[in-house]
Image (cartoon, rainbow, N blue to C red; front, side, top):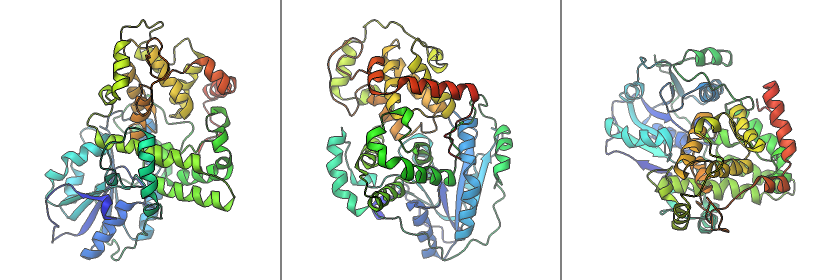
Length: 467
């Protein structure tokens, strides 16, 4: 466990504290959460209970109904499981800019120490860089996002083939269940005054009361929360794992797991998914290697990238060959060339690209294979590579349930050559990998996908909804 833990300040334990505070920023779950286990162990050593603090503010970048709804839908089950374990729970919904923005600091004033999530992107990374020095108590973060702790890979890896042998060598020591939470001192203190009670029926009204972007509606395909995550995993194992290797790149076959939103928001862990896939494959004489390659090697390559670069969404992080070839073709003619607004509203000449963008608008997620095509075409139809990058990042930040994630940034930059190799030279792309509509027609059922997205757009309902 120790290789997962980092102290981010030099403060000591508060000897007059009432509890240990666990601040759940990214791993919004009770099960298979090394950070929560560490907080409980700290509390047991000190003879104290644990308070689990989770917040949702109206001020995070891109705050909207879709993201708010997905997080709030997980709160009732979170509260139930914490009660069962004897852990206190404070969920604070900051609805308006005028509402208090110092709840963490108030709670930390009564805490022996603060434990949080070690996460290399988005708000958690910013908080972990600024908050610890403003507290008067010890602040520790724990990596519960990766199976092999990020600390075990001490330098940036440049491709799957370089990280794969290292992951495989270390994996046996970490591919085992997270220790159980064993609370020695149950929470008996009053519920903090900042707590917001959340039930399933209250979610719409709570979202409506928040000072956020109400133009981005909730996903028609994904319900947030631990129960939905568990249902998605069970459905994948029962229906799709056996055909994953064959059909994963066929969007209309729906052979992938659909777990990326739940992994991003920490409502399920990659560790428990990997163990469940291994177990199911063994029990049913299946091979899960291709799925585990994506879940472990490719995902942890993304976290390694995010941990070791300063500016995640920067073309400067591309390999030298990719930067050079894009620079050499920077003045190549783009025809057509679309604005951000045209991309956002799915107003291009390409029916497949438009359908991919509509899937993002409706579902909050694009199938991984078509998302590659989606990104490549944005490069081809943007005035500059920088404009293309900004378009992809902004669309993900606003609409994607699996955006703002290490996988988001590496997936976007892969379109520009990150973690890839040179290919045949052509206009605009240089030696960056190219993808074409004709290629998609040869390899996938484009017509089937177009019909599916058209039906989603017409009805506003998804028969595959995870609820």
